[in-house]
Length: 166
Image (tube, rainbow, N blue to C red; front, side):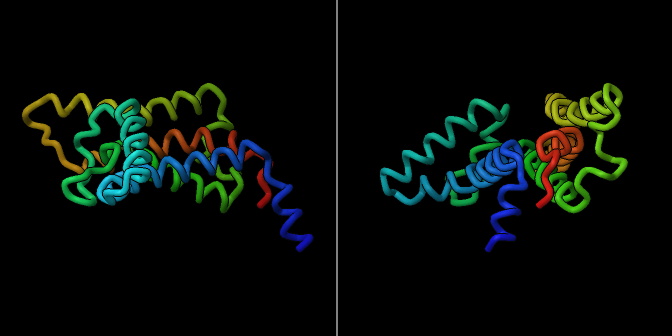
């Protein structure tokens, strides 16, 4: 019991907050279509809140996957791919505590520039959708979002979870 309590106290508040926000961001877009399809007004209200948040952050929420037809995810797969990239980097950070060479925060301004360039993959794919020769494809959107999430996570995870010894 004391060992579990010591592990709990070893994590800084920003690490807990970062993980909590990541869990909420991952679960909300998936839960929204099922909550709306439930037909129960309190759950539909929660779904409406999630959809409203998705409309504010996602440039193409209408391209979400239909998880409970006709209800779709609250964000497009590009946004969700970004979250999946962040989760991948969180899991990597949990494994090596930010000691590997690919953690961009340790390179200062150069690391920020690399992270920024990787994050620009997201809007590049969004812009390419304006051309007839670039089709809208859920897998492609997820992949481009994932690369952006990897770049963002490679920079942010060491900052958020600095001192995390769990």
